[in-house]
Length: 315
Image (cartoon, rainbow, N blue to C red; front, side, top):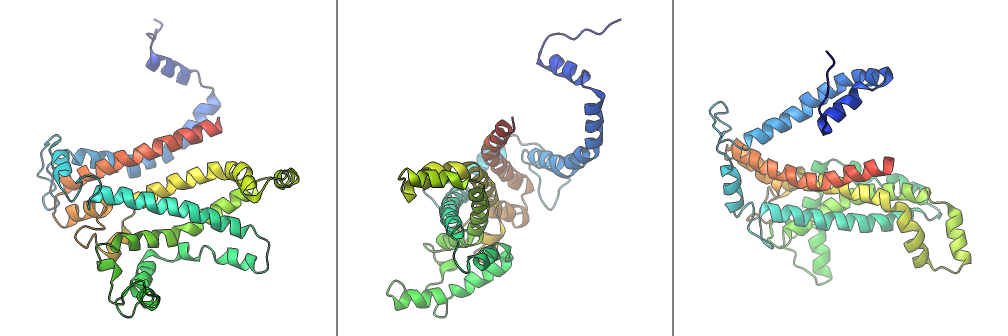
């Protein structure tokens, strides 16, 4: 008796799989161990985390839990510390603000630094080699360094600002409601701008020099060459860098936790720190997992276009 597949997308996909040549089957067989490891290390914990977000599980009694539906999410969006609208000192608003401002500044400054690195002047080779120094410094050391710079009275930044009449020497940036978030943003920008610069500089090196020569002969200005040659040439790499750093900045935990812990008065509270505090301080693991699910959905909004863009480029 011959098996007949009913028409539809799933049977057609199954038929295409059955028609694959032996070489492709062998490739999938070789990939099975890696796929199983990814499923065990990545997909299973993600599925467990999503499932946990719909329960009333507690950190101290993980075995005693029951499903509560969307109750955690309703409580989450009713919590002013998580979301209280734009503008407002809440974890969701702070995360979006931090990510948007930091990544935009990193892109702009990184592009400018990449253009500077292209100049063939004495000493530029050494400057290129040390450009990544801020990126390779451990985050703990970075936070300690900026903390010393922003100390009251003895901090270098406060001393300089007082000398030029723009501040007072008793301002502690990490403890100030108006200065804490700018301080976090400055640390992000200082650390990640060189990574943008190196990636964009490498992309600029792939642009044929004869395009610039032809544009110069035609009388194009420096701004015109940058707009019509450089920007299109680095657009793809810049987009990848932006998406990667949006994901990293939005999901970053250590900068805020090590410097302010989310304070003062939730002025720097971001989603990763909020989830951590709910899990380890309030012992509400189900509620913390619900906040993590919200983070996952927001990051997927950025990740899916990136995957589609890469797939379109490859085809």
